[in-house]
Image 1 (cartoon, rainbow, N blue to C red):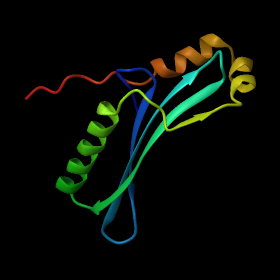
Image 2: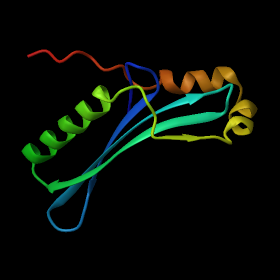
Image 3: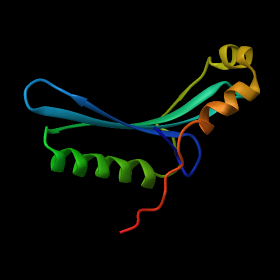
Image 4: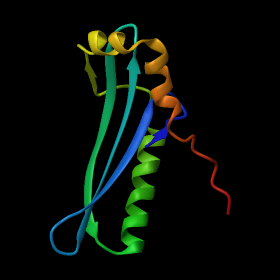
Length: 107
């Protein structure tokens, strides 16, 4: 997981599947403490062969999808206010800060 440059959190999941396959999935979400909502985009998953080159290429492609997606949301989920407010604003704001900020790629 990482802090998305436009706010919120991006995530790429890589999971081993049956046989010689791996799934690569991505998502981006942004939480609104005051409204108690989570706005999100799910970028689906891709199944690739379990080898370094295929997984790296697919993960890189998923990262590009997440970072270049327009700042519009496919889904907005509400009902989080009571749980988040019970923990307090400081707790809530600290969660996102725990994830790394992406660095520019240098070659």
